[in-house]
Image (cartoon, rainbow, N blue to C red; front, top):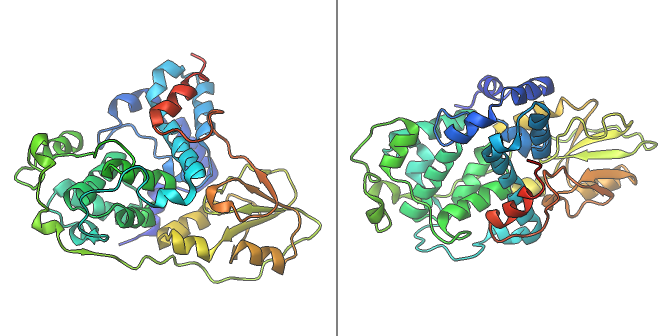
Length: 371
């Protein structure tokens, strides 16, 4: 089902084409239409998640293009959500892999309903979206919420495994954004669960389906029994198909820049003469596995970085085998074991640390916007 040509058509990897995509953003139309399936979304999330561009880069670009903050406040806010989830990950570390604030209740299975995994739920919009998801690696944000609501709150699957399944196939796989959003839907990182009924899906996805297990009012949906179609569940073996390690060449007279799954920024120290290494650590991908299309995607994105070489192995192996002593890398929660000179990522605002809600975080951020 996966077709790399199809991926390239939807999410091209050449840097100049990515930048051109930013010029096509309509942040004003985004604010009014983003919840609809054909809304004016940016399709930038895979590039932001892979660190090719940053939320700050996009924000500053739009400001330089003449957009006033008031006219695109909803778009700025959605960019800020990505930084917020990252700040939670930085503060909470491994805790985001468990129910963060409240236990999920009720839970019937720690797997994923087979009907969701196979796209046979009977909800036409959802089933079509899952088919396309496997093909393209992308889902509209509302579809992600719908799937999570069906999995966790209707099918009573614990959020963790379904979140891993979705992360595995997403080109914009960002564990903080993904896991914490699933927890928000499941009520483990929010004060209430998120539900979507058939009427809601019909409205935002332009469908007119009726007589489904979601075709109920909101006052009844919270008490639904698990539909029979969602009862069978399974846990798939999610394995990352990493390439075989090949010998790389290191000039020990030069510093070494470490790139990874979350940092493929072609502008980072571009003018610096250095060894440039894309580090793919088996331990990271064992804990957070991704699909073949994700590996192909980062491989193609890395071609924007001149003379980059790929090392498949652990950081300490790379450092010891090649006797590296001048190492630079960008900060990230998965880089805690790196040794060398750590550089901060580009954040939209100076607001750092843990906030129990996005809106507490956003309230601080808004103070830095010049209206």
